[in-house]
Length: 136
Image (cartoon, rainbow, N blue to C red; front, side, top):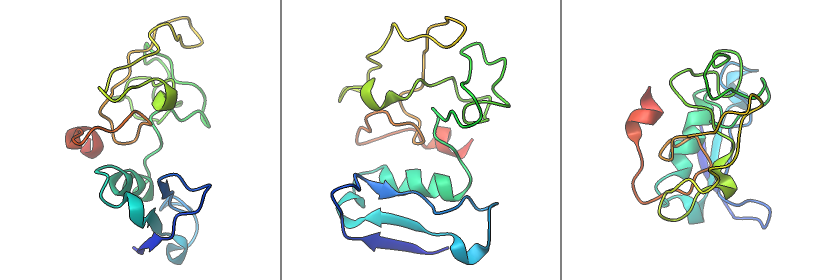
């Protein structure tokens, strides 16, 4: 595995995802890059390592939108059934680690109740977060 620090560019907010998940392409194509300014933020490196190990964002939609009831958890979202459906917490969380979009619903009309401490989500990252969520 190759981990490197990069100079922050205006379009790079936190880190750079692994160029390819481990199960795609050649091993020499895999890397994790993190901006030096984000190395000590308690989440970026772990988040990017999660991608390197093959984890998707909790709000992933490339496989379809995950339903709150979990009926499609193995084929949609992050493909992990122990992670509740996530509507993308980037603009739905605050510095107190609270979910701030309680009226959002999935395609079936069910209200989301996402984990706020999953390192693979885009929730605001407090100084501490749940390692057990990352290692499941």
